[in-house]
Length: 119
Image (cartoon, rainbow, N blue to C red):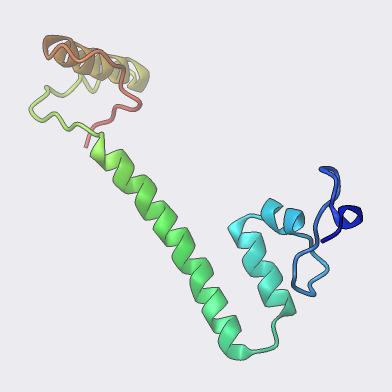
């Protein structure tokens, strides 16, 4: 490549594929959008089936990873007394959160729960 062929930082180098999309355009697409572009340009039914399966699998794997991460940092306390059902829901929830905070204080855990609910 000669010095006249070098690209300035504001220029986008086209990808080697004859797609009409530059590398920067492709980099800006989400995974779902990339799969959609593939499906729009595809004529092979096998590729279509594989891309559809990939779209479903990516969504499921992301959901599973998020759920696993949440489970990994979750605590479950059993044996907490039920709140008075005659009290309003928000008051019962506040009591539950206070009970959980007391347990965390006793354990010297310096954090706030992200969510608190009864099972």
